[in-house]
Image (tube, rainbow, N blue to C red):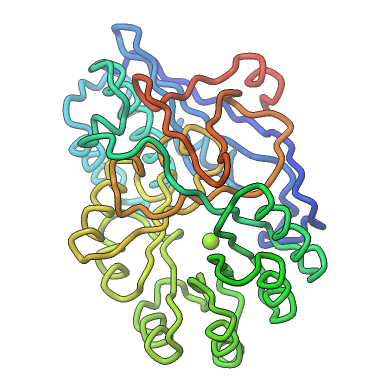
Length: 361
Ligand SMILES: [Mg+2]
């Protein structure tokens, strides 16, 4: 394929989640911010991608436009993973982590969309085969901070058919409320987002064991201290998950052997090319991956397609929010806790032009 045209569409779609929105980031999180990339070949085939852009979408948009697209437009591409590596090499002065790899992720996802459309197959087929038609999802609740709300939203998610729930709670009272809300025997986890000190971790982990958590996510800072995370697993007998902020297979080669669950994020890790390699690496080590929430741009579809092709990708992370609109109204949202994988050429993603116009920034 030869890329003839490229355009980035910065979008912000308001959402509600029932929380006070004082969650995890420096600013209140009120909009789904999407750095939507459209690539078009000289044959007129269009591919869509996006790069991670939660609270950094203008930055990601700039990185795509300024750093990556000059290497993409006009390029003849017949091997996407090799092209991805070339982009990483040409841009390595900026680091192969953070914003620069988020931007490369957007391009990589769009290229896989095009390559699959050219062959008239789904991305899952192109990745080696659609091994399943639906994948289990878990409800990834935002941080409410208030035990009563935690219990209420857990009960709501279970009522909708989910049989696994993730909290983003950090206090024992809130996590206990989560267990009360989901009931016994349901997979329950909490994502600490690196908020516990070593002392707090030592105090909390026995409770996490007692509450039967399926994993504890990013308990400590830094989240790439594999030795510390591995030691926690051994000491407390609770699975640890980490890796949503890791990029490329190089970092996952360190993380995969150390802990039970790694969490590659398709819009952060370097796109489908890197994520496919990470899933394969984990499979060779006999481990499952827990893909990080792709949010609701093309990465959502890319995650679903990837999971259809990679049986060791265990559960789809569904951020438990209500958006004012979905970029593609046919988005396969979980039903009874399962996400159906679109079986159309490419990702199966087609944005609604009216939604793009209405939420353009
Ligand atoms: Mg997380």
